[in-house]
Image (cartoon, rainbow, N blue to C red):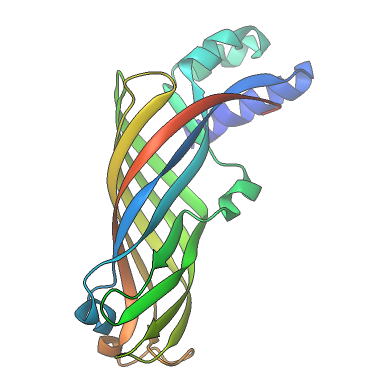
Length: 222
């Protein structure tokens, strides 16, 4: 809640001064391995593959100090106490964070995507090392084509939890590794509305991922 208040102060200060701000933007992209376990998809093929993507504005101490004169004096100490705030504006939350690109290796292919329109997070660390925790609402749409399982169009909302260790050796490049688990309303293979039996359904997707991070300035009103 405190970070939301700080963000509101920064937004109001930027708009009141009617001048753009150079905000660092972090683009993260890299390979991901997905596990549809437990259940028949995981029993058929342990791993499926794709991409992990993130796009965030980084409101860090450098930005806060550079723009502190535009912040109302009564809020400067509160804003200065924040190490970093990460923000994904609403239109950008519709960019998929997961893309399934998994052709048939054994018997089953999966193609689709996951978006995370709403999320909250917390982080520990400093000096270029950051351990982040994130919890959010996810929506996944994916088509499963198989020689051994019923063909299925999976479309479900769920809750996703992510832990990610990020290393930024420079201001413009970094790398991170992490794990995400998403739990969904079950969907029985070959159906759309059936939620039971759960041992014949997709209800959990886990993924291990590696991302490369590229940071660049973007001129915008916060």
